[in-house]
Image (cartoon, rainbow, N blue to C red; front, side, top):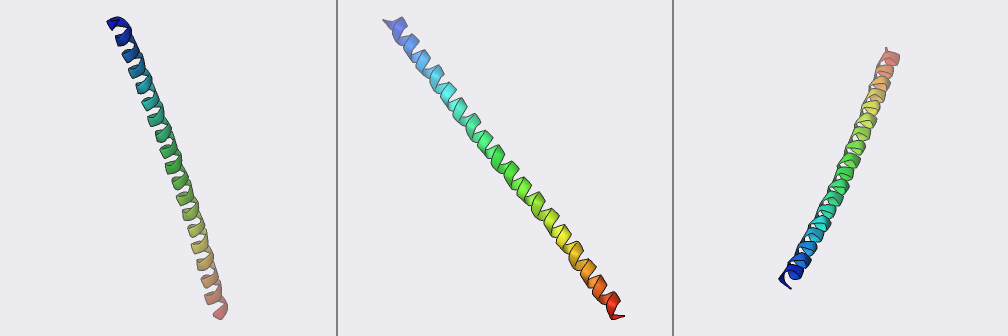
Length: 68
């Protein structure tokens, strides 16, 4: 009787731990994906801003050179 009860408790515990570990890895994966997504958006925004700045500089340079 005690052995069966202990076996059931142990099985339930290991299963619970596995579920918790799965949940943790899942949330870590989701968190990782979110971080990667944010990093991608940030790098795209940086790229876009640098191109916009280059364009503005080129336009202002063109404007100043055409005024002379």
